[in-house]
Amino acid sequence: MRAWGLLTIGTTRAASPCSTDVRRNREAEGVGVNIERDTLGRVQDLVAAADRIVVLTGAGISTDSGIPDFRGPKGLWTLNPKAEKMATITHYLADPEVREIAWQTRLHSSAWEARPNAGHRAIVSLQDRAQLHALITQNVDGLHQLAGVSEDLVIEVHGTMHHSRCWNCQDRLPMAETLRRVAAGENDPDCLRCRTRGEHGVLKSDTISFGQSLVPEVIDRAFRVATECDLLIAVGSTLAVGPVNRVVPEAKRHGAQVVIVNGEPTEMDHLATEIIRSGISEVLPLLLTPGG
View (tube, rainbow, N blue to C red):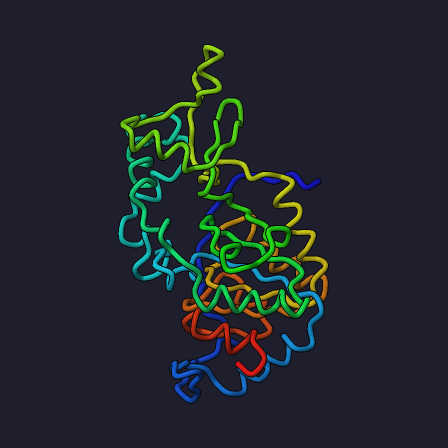
């Protein structure tokens, strides 16, 4: 088993020379998509020829579902740099006020109303054709499963917002149960299991905060499937957060073709066979669905 460290952030490099300048020359189902025809054809050929596709998704795939990303022009941390500092495990554990703000934010988050978009559904088409080997996601919103991707194929490297977990005893329960306590007036709900034993357990969402160790079995599986695929498609991620971003060079090293679909340059553009700069929900159906 690999010895994995903490969740870390890199710095996005400039676009590589192989980046595609997107042009207006294709319409699909009434939606204008900026993409070169040649690039579209090459990526479609790569998808058609692949037997074991691994898709790696980031926050960008969920923005069209109403969930903001983090580092885009209108990202949560771009607009509010202090919020990124608050998203560290040390701040969360040490400061009850941080936890109270976090619980109110979760309770009133619009993410609970989010639904899968065309990008999520396009990935399901790979599963339907038995081409989807695994889906590695940095997202915690559960929209891939809601779209229809089998739970067995989804690797949630940063956890899920749909459960809460005790930092002390590791007890895990549905987030809805914890949020009911918050709605009833508990500003900083503690672990009830620990309370019965005379202990204090801090509850948090079952997601990975900055400075928190990843679950070794989960990240190990992500790297294993990367070595097994013949095509890796990275979607909606700047590929700036480690260690999951390193699945891209790992797949490349084991012979996989790499396609990057993102609206902004990424740290792994230099490894890509093809790069597409476009809206995710608009372009993925063209790339992944036969007849687009």
